Image 1 (cartoon, rainbow, N blue to C red):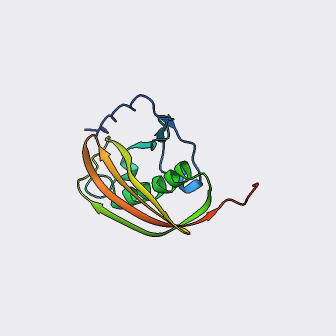
Image 2 (image 1 turned 180 degrees about the vertical axis):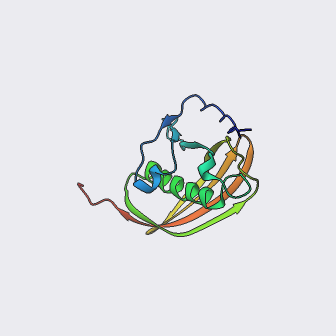
Image 3 (image 1 turned 45 degrees about the vertical axis):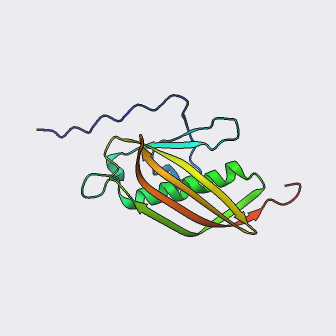
Length: 148
């Protein structure tokens, strides 16, 4: 008897594949983004796949933390065009519910604050209306050089 993988939820309308920003990021598989284009925050999305699983068959906590960290950094670049490089100084994550196989997982942002060379970001990783994880990060940032 063969084990069948659950069919993934369809990619919602308006999402496009986000090109990988690094070899590590490429290992996550297809990641999507929907940019409303009106200055409001983008929404990032990904299917939870077997390669993302923990031993219980749900999305591994390290996978969720990686998504939150990566998506929050991308959000900083999207919202604050003056920022060039950034480094994660602190990442906090609170796991609320399992991310089941095949689920469509979205990252929604709750805020961004800048204080000098530091930016704080908050996000929720959601499956539909259910929050699977809530995260926050502090990044050290460098502004782009004038004229660069």
